[in-house]
Image 1 (spheres, rainbow, N blue to C red):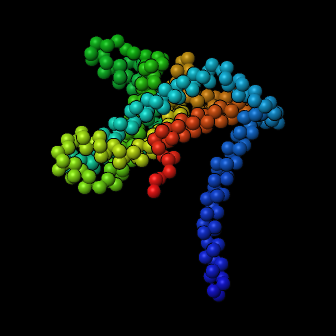
Image 2 (spheres, one colour; image 1 turned 90 degrees about the horizontal axis):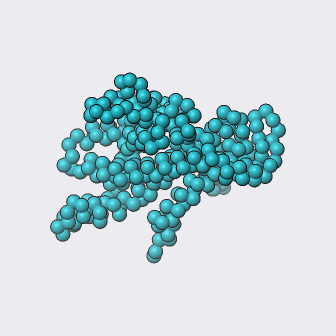
Image 3 (cartoon, one colour; image 1 turned 180 degrees about the vertical axis):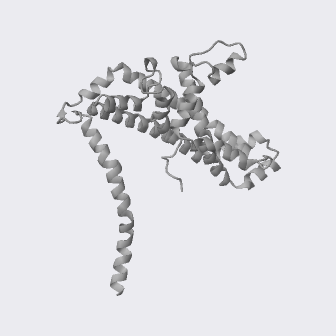
Length: 298
């Protein structure tokens, strides 16, 4: 009986970990390896794949449409980093303040857009920035005598519309991350700073921002991935995957075009591998510069 108990105690941890290992293998490792192999093939649905080596990657380097999609995705990602890190942090600090009235109301108001379907949100914003008579944005600008703007046919305006949509949907989510980080900061730091005569800005700069660094690193990491992987918002905003002169085409949109619409699975796999490499390089670089890989000193 004792031997059985000891044996079960040794086996139990492995039994608990096994499902996670299987999930990792089935849903991440095997698909990644299969995509990597497929990226070196001329693979189409219904046909036997042909090994073509690095031809897909060589073609990508000279594919102007692919390069446009990379530029659009990187610009969008950088825009989300500029807008969806500092502003949610400031909003979280304001809501966390004891002087703030109606904190729960503002938390709910900021978070509510994240619960909205991206298809519905994209459609609403397409109508808002549309060219039809009575579209919300042009009607508003008309009050100030501004001529109607073709928002979704101009590269700069269309990117601005996508960023506004991103801010509307994700400001509340990032704000909640920062609110969680603020809860972990001991109030004694602020009391000591107040005794030393520190201003609100000095407290924010020397206490809040440094102690929120882990939260900022996390938000930056997921924002890089989300920015590079954006697709559905653009698809709904432009009512399809063919925006004028590809002004709204993203890397994932180009992957969808090649793999699903044109049945070029091998070429689409190469696009996906390039996207993975870009995301990993950017995230590993920012983690390196943020000091997350440094060993803790004794």
